[in-house]
Length: 357
Image (cartoon, rainbow, N blue to C red; front, side):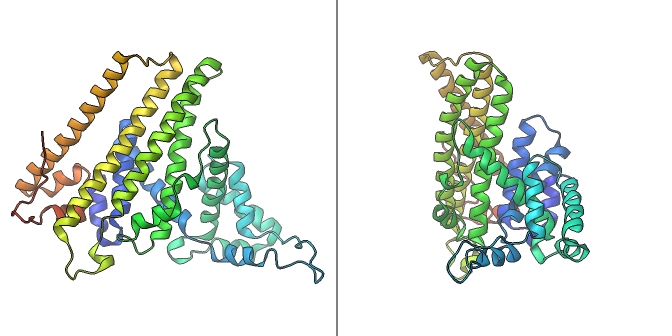
């Protein structure tokens, strides 16, 4: 069973934005050489982790609220708080940011059992609604904390705040019941993408100082360009609405479809820029980058070819729409919600993309 079919069977239980993120990530992993099955599994796992990490931990929030208010009556320094199951799990995960989550979870459970007893260990492992179990969530939090610190220490520092929270919240206010959580996930996805790009380039450069200087310069261009395009994609998504969020009354179907298409294009442009920039970094790790006019012309030609591919995708979508072939549309990366919108005729009675040459 294909990934698109699996996502389709999930129906309304899986938000459209999650389906889009999974399909986009799977395509990116396939382009890196992974098999369809490997790409699908990794894309789903990463999206689950991203959503879990955005969900606040009630016990930890309460614990934080108590800190600073536990000093003595004379206003002395706060008393040291006893360690919790979550703090123990985060500490273990932070020490192994690339470790297997299930292995770390078991390691944390044993540490909690030894330090706090069976009651705390059992409570930490219980499911808490949509959050899953608190122990697994703490592992994800700890690993991301290490990743965030690494990002800030890179030669070209990267921070969550590169993507302003208010901008990210606005991006999902019209399409999500939990825009703050989606915004946090967007920030984390940005950080992860930049860390992954740098790690790949650094590994390719090895101990060659000249190569490291070249990839650092390329990384600087990547961070600047990708941040700009990522923000542009979020801004475009902020114009998109869902009738499930804003209500079906007088819903601007045609206008919303065009806005959604624009948001899709902006997201695709950001992803293509990231992928092409990583290729340039890996190339720079092997030899000096050619910044001559001829090389720039080649890059412009490559960008034009990418845009032509995007236009071909739209033409393929039109052909599938005319044939009422939903499976073909899903293969092209469209969610069921987008397919339904594409089938609705515009003011001229057309139900397709309007492509231009």
